[in-house]
Length: 167
Image (cartoon, rainbow, N blue to C red; front, side):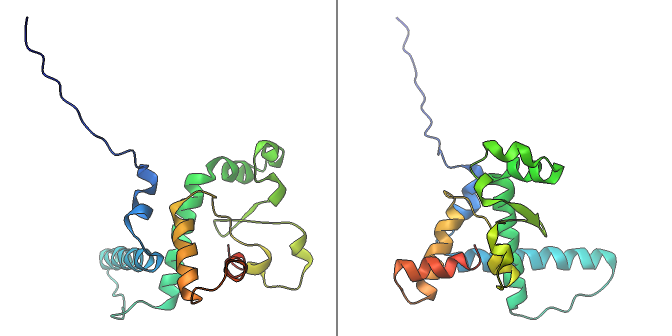
C-alpha cells in the first residue's frame, strides 16, 4: 500500500469587496488614508498634464467630506447595483421586487438617496433626501461607532437621530 499525503489550506472567507472596510477599526482613519490616496492620485494626474497642484500639508475638511462621499458611492455601487441600474434606465416599475421600493429612491450626483413625502418639508435637500446605506456593511458599523464617539457616548436615540440627518 502506498502512503498518501494530504495537504490542507485554510482560506479566509472574508468578502473581497469589504476587505478595505474591514481593514480599519476607525472611520476617521479610513477616511484620512483614502483622502491621502485621492490626493496622491490627483497630484500625479496634474503632473502628467503639466500643471502644479498647490497642496497643504494637512487635509482640508472638503477633502475629507469628498472622500467620505466617494466611499459611500463605492459601497452603494456594490450593494445596490440592481436598483441603481434600474433607476438609471428609467424602469421604476422593476423596483417593485426591491426591498427599497417603499423608500422611493432616486440618484442625485451619483448618490442613491431617499425620496418621499419629506420633499414637501422646509428642511435642506440633504436632510430631506438622506443617503442610503446598506443594512449589513462594515462602513455602517464604522459610521455608527464614529458618531457614538463624536457625540461623547450619547444614547442610542440621539445617535440614530444624528445619523439620520445625513444617512
